[in-house]
Image (cartoon, rainbow over all chains, first blue to last red; front, side, top):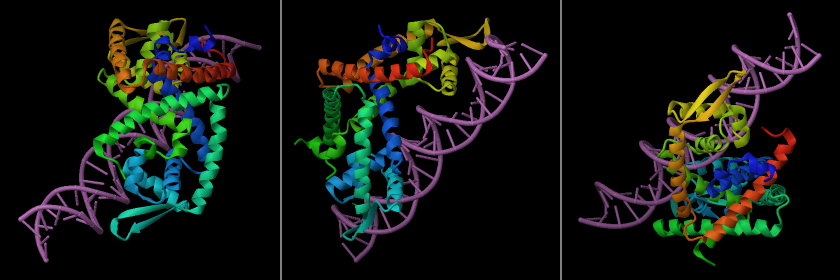
Length: 159
Length: 159
DNA sequence: ACCAATCGCTGGCATTGCCAATGAATAGGG
DNA sequence: CCCTATTCATTGGCAATGCCAGCGATTGGT
């Protein structure tokens, strides 16, 4: 029986949902404050990742990919655009749509962000063997996948 | 390359902090809505767990255990007290302190909550083998432990 | 008796997630 | 071609959450 065992009730320590919530909160604040030094929040980082990896896309698709509320997306994009990290161009073939493109400045900042996170995660999981961190990630990803495919079947692919 | 692989950028799929945040959000909403049917939020559930497992305690200690803001704790307790799930009695030996005690109604509701969560988690991790869920929990708990002991060394044990 | 610290409590602020409504633009049916 | 329905981006509001500053009552130390 260690010190930490005594801190949390066993009823909570043995509840996966609770433990995950706690860990995520820890991870969230830890990583969010790093990104904040670049003027980004987690969603903005994710948005930049999307545009960098998949190329230009319209807001609807980015929102679908990241499971973001389309309204919230707008305000995130506003800040990204003001900082000239992305461009927003109307699609000439469908003038309702805004085509999002990451700028070179955006790509540079994204690389900085990735470096920051690459440093932050080892701190977060300090002491835990790399193999176990990877295992944790793999298991979590597995659960996410199932839900993602479920949602995908229900409302069709965004692309 | 599965369908889900294509959804999220690899840069995010391979970032443990991101995956954990997504999974926790999923878990959060899933479990929170179950608890809501009993009029509880996650913190109130955790509070009841504490009082049930460790017996009566003062607010300071519950807040320390669950890492809750003492101000937020007050409002959670207010609702628990109104619902007569807990009692708040002034400590006669230190009249600043409020001694929290779970009532029998509180214990009954807690048991209901535990049953709801016992049902909810398998749905959340549907398809993932029990052993892997347990592994996920164990790994997450491990990370939490390290941080808990760190915090514990920094500011002393709450008890 | 005085000063500092503790405890619970109140209120405020920023962030976040979620939902409803709107205007511009397009697509589809007759 | 016109009318209607739908799509897309945008705005605004609401509730929950986390976090922090300050305050009154009470206690402990000197």
